[in-house]
Image 1 (tube, one colour):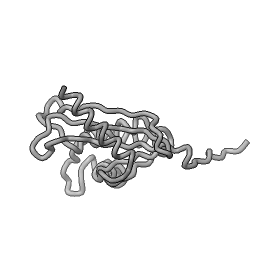
Image 2 (spheres, one colour):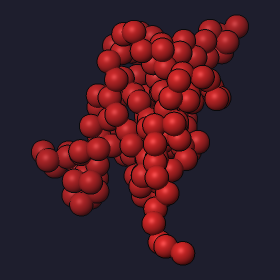
Image 3 (cartoon, helix red, strand yellow):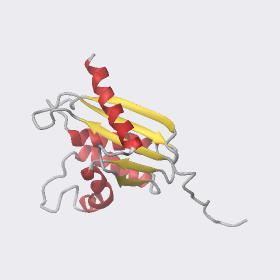
Length: 165
């Protein structure tokens, strides 16, 4: 018996696509949505999730970044070892891969010493990242020809529509 790691192939990795939607983000969004789609490498849908996002108790509005981060949190919760999560939100992807380790060391403050925005969500993301170190988060161009990204976008927008009716 050897202590070899199992071989990870493209056939065993699931791809999880996330998206957040916050219409009228610049003027104040009172309702957002998130969409998460879990796919096989051949784009077969394994599962999908959509949910409306309302402002936090102490807030009047929500933001697109909060919706994107909440979608990432959902994806991390359902992720299995070696899954690849795709997001079209550069702030979320770079925050996960590049910035959060520095923020953590600096007491959740940015290089300019100002507090990190949405610290409550970054703390959750950080804990999930530590619990699932083999999960990869990658950027994907939004509104392109990527089926998973299009599906996640549709789910996020459907969540908005369902919540308003």
